[in-house]
Amino acid sequence: MYARAMNLSVRASEIRVISRDDWGTTIQFTQDYYSDSYQDRGEKLMKLHKDSEGAIRIVYEEMLSSY
Image 1 (cartoon, helix red, strand yellow):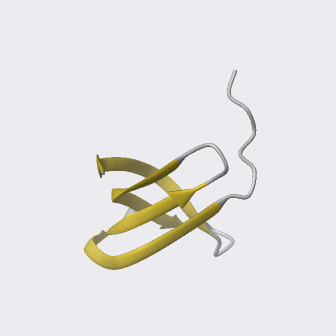
Image 2 (image 1 turned 90 degrees about the vertical axis):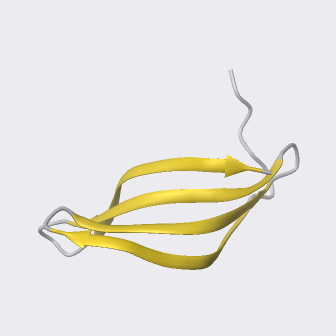
């Protein structure tokens, strides 16, 4: 089983809106992820949807590349 990440830091940069439709907004960005035991940088695609109460929810995400 995976250990819980400690001292976690996640940063998004170069955020771009890819599309908007009835299901929500698709964005693409560079994600920098750091923890005590792992670090990663890469391109991520994420679909966001506003629910009936106005909260924004992640309905899909995919790491497109990692370097």
